[in-house]
Image (cartoon, rainbow, N blue to C red):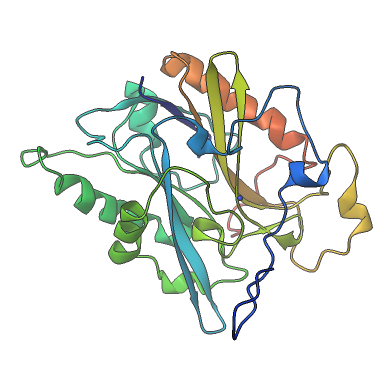
Length: 287
């Protein structure tokens, strides 16, 4: 069964060098949440068929950006669309392609996450990718689905550094299995709770079905983990005005339609609220 997707829109010594230690994930340090069992990878790729790819751009002192793509399956998405829905907690984001998804209840391209001013360039690259697929030679309308958060605090956002090559590389490199988390892909330049933000993922099993989530975090507030207000005890060094944005992509193999996918998307807001994040839009004209 094809996965359903909904958008709101994670020391070895070498001979001459030392690789950094892998950072533990929350469950590995006892920060368990919820009552449902985790999937084998605790990642969105626990939903069969889902693949994730990143392109990370780190150049000089001021380029910290990238793109993350989520592919619901390995085939031609335009020819084999998946049910989908969008829920918007507030309308300040630049979520390209959302209106057709809301109207038809289908997703027909890879889902891409990036920085705010990269959205048109990423959408154009997804058009190139989709139109070039075998079987799409006569296609005359494609609906790229591209979301964003603003990585302008750490990144030269006006440079719009993510283009066709970066998007196609992320799609080509998309894979099942463990998902790279943290300051990678669309999370390379993001900030959350005044600390470094990034990409995170998790999954839960509900009976015979799996629900997986991938998040691009870029927002303020007072961090809570397991109900503890850790943000009050730790000294944040980045911006933490309470403004910002987040994209949450949810996938499931449960046999649900677009209507129920939208209900699932709406419930991601409850999970967001548990982190201590305020849910409000920034003033008009604020990045």
